[in-house]
Length: 367
Image (cartoon, rainbow, N blue to C red; front, side):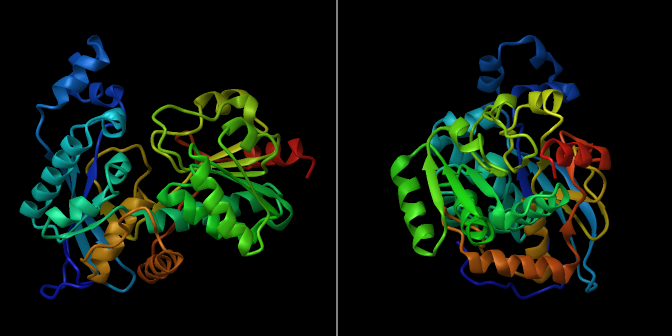
């Protein structure tokens, strides 16, 4: 486990980022695994246990506005979201560590844990202890962009945050807790939703002590029915936000992957704006050489955090564990601005958000 924040040596510090299929459907999209379409999901997931981690692509062309450059690799972890959430923790950690060692072999100095590889076990701490390179979950910059994007989208549809009720789904997770702390002083009232009542009560007590108006619930529907602004960051494997749950004119920032918000919302609720959280423009002429569903030069914030740290030469461990500090969120936000990373244009279910969509939501709320 690296304790230093910066590694001496060459100016070019390289990174790797671990990604994995969110579902068996993602596996079946690859030509060599098309047979998976014809097999039961349990069979496919059992077969993935015999697949080794692999280098999926080299990432090139990242150039900071300061002139610094970096490059890296996508490392494929052969486990689905369901396996990572519900499978044997020790075995899953072993697979993630094997991905990290492959990153080391490639020459990476820091590795990012993507999607559900970042929530297994103790959220990266055990993985970091097993590797000789830095490890980050990318959660600090994910928090920063989620809150920034949610507030910006709210403003676009006419929501005044100081007069609005916000809700955080997955409020007791590592990302959700910090999102709640950032939102609390900026909104009129805040609803925290998660599965564990005791943890919700503890977080609510902290925020109430700082002067925030806070409610808690373990029921998603109850959290959403009067929320103007929602940040969804749960670790649910299936969509939990359904069309009938949402208030007309509301904004939902869905940071979770797989999505927390059902695609039915886009089909049935034209009076609600759903945006994908954590989409970031990367400086330079970046080539990912792998299609993960984003437009050119755009990455998830967790990916971007790993790139930012490499550009800065900060190759020690960063966003680990389940308690991310506000100071760390502010620091990575400053480094992002320094190197030219910024929030990307809003997207909703793989499509660019249009002025017409925004106008419909404003009208629905009578704003």
